[in-house]
Length: 197
Image 1: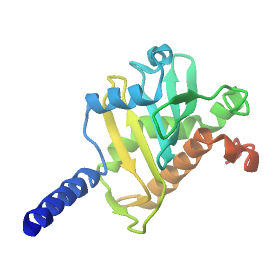
Image 2: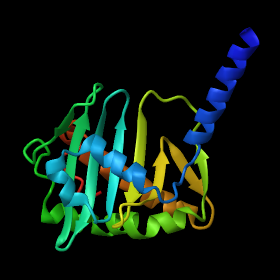
Image 3: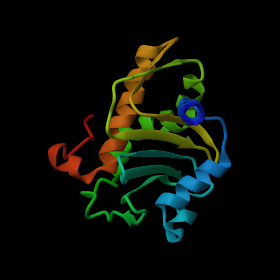
Image 4: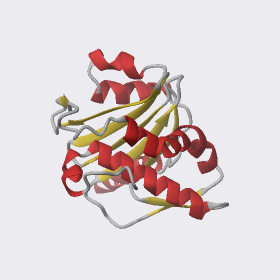
């Protein structure tokens, strides 16, 4: 009986390890729909459907999230949080510190476009190096194309090696910092303006 229990735990651990080691996701429309259903109320879902977007989330039991989506006239952001029992909260622009502005998007347009258009293709040429130190919070960055397919997904603390990895890592970390800032209003009291970042 003990051997059977050890075998079951070993198989479960291996399955979880394999499932969590997929650093760059192939298209998975079901997962994108599931992500949207977990964070966005139906009243906002139509604003992100059929549009390319960046989705960043971080947390532990509950989590905060931020979305940057490309629109016909530029960009639009949403942010909120999901508590540990699954209640969804959308933050208003007043809570966000009025970051959803033309100067903000002008300052970060290039990095948002790089994240949506170029980063997924460049990342496929890179090797992912995971930081194996234990962290109590997770973070996740996903790129979802206009078809609703996840074309890039990376979680937790990673770095990349490969051709042009120094430039790639600098852009990747800059994008993660901006997305974290968008996702977490508490950071805005310490770093009120990212337009110069």
